[in-house]
Image 1: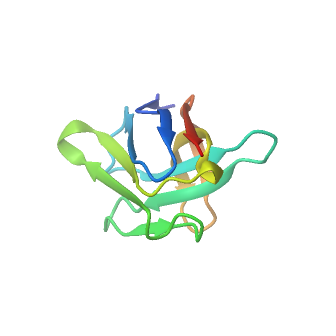
Image 2: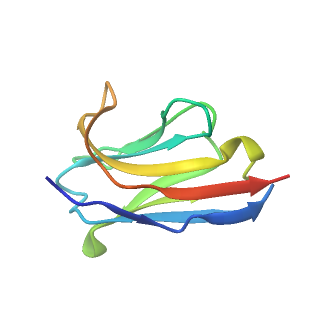
Length: 118
């Protein structure tokens, strides 16, 4: 069982940017993903990066605004979030994916809170 630690959350105004980090695993060995959970809603997929090719995948709601990337030397995965909207508010979770195609999660981090004010 891996231990994932997210950081970088905080309060930002609409239109602003944040970069989340997820440390704890070698991203060249795992498919990695970011998910989020807004208050009163189910957890949803945000973005993923394939361990073999580095190919990236995004939900329609963040495509063009968010970028997932990895730094193999630092064993860290990032989520760069730009043009943030109040609808992006929630707890963001990093995860290892047992199956990327179905977004099947193997391990979760504890999450980091992102609040976007209008």
